[in-house]
Length: 488
Image (spheres, rainbow, N blue to C red):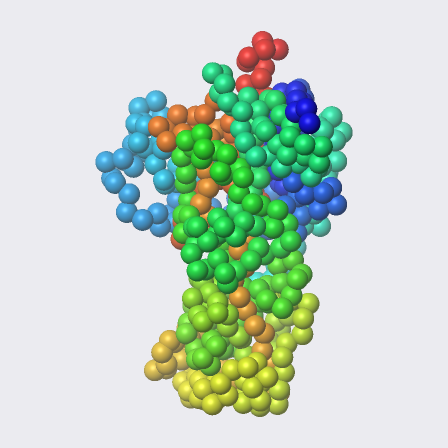
């Protein structure tokens, strides 16, 4: 079969928020743009299609307090000070070791914070509406906005804007390799229903992480790969080709490849983001029927990821949250229960344990010890950390500690779901992919979850935001490159 060649100015790989932002931005600047999307049209959008797309914003015109500090202060290990001290130098004086270093670039974070309001206003100009919408968190550490209609609204609205600007979509088309010449990256080799095809143009990689590729998950996360899955159906399309293509050209990386953004979900459910965030008001037990973590170290939005990782470390990567009638009566509790499967219930703790397949005597002993360690309930406040901590219990429970003794009892199973991988490509603040010698790879840009930013703990509600910001920057940069080459 003859290999087809399609000529464009800009080729965008991926149809989520980063890819659509890149496509619209490049098309607005006069470029002829193609979007390559592995999924069929009915499921386009990757993770974006299924997420509620919360944004770490105080308003459309201002990022949340502490935005940049939270990202830059994420623990990145113990990098060599003689290298990272270059961050204080003017850009032209920074050495290649710094430019390719596996750390967060403060300029990248500053660009994200400075450009976030403009990116959202730009999306609003294309019809995306933003507002303060209810979150699943009863306790919160920061302010959040979201698109009305969630990520699906972004996919539909920005996809419509792209089509209106003449962007051509190629569905069921999987990018497999980058085309390189003396001018840099000049296109993509892709597999289509008709066979292999080459799409020529400057390339923006926006194809998400690798959570849908079990081999890469096992490579980077070892045994943990077996006890997690993508948080939503769209993540199964993210199989890591964008990462592999760029690494084959010598791209540098950033972010922690040992971790991913973990969300606590009900393993029985196939619903998108079937999250269980109610555990601070109950007791978590593992397969052995024992507590293993402080369920309530602080606001649930700031601590759920670390608690989820503790759950994944248990036998089988699973735990159960046990709630009594007192816990179930917490106002608005069910806002933090996103599963479509009802809890397992029983009149007694022992019967509940047996229905869960857990050792009843051990679960009963665990609940009895916990109840005995709870303080008087005066001052209980489910809307903020209240300091009601257990006494003499290991591990402790730092807040919201009340006895679990009023039946009937209910339990939800919880496992770790992979929202996106932390490790990814390193880019400049202009969304250019950097090679291991610290040089931008000409003609190659990247944005969204494919790029590395996080190391130990996800700075909540920044993923969709950075996809929009750097997708827009990448599209404009790719279009400008074409203009500079053609003199247009």
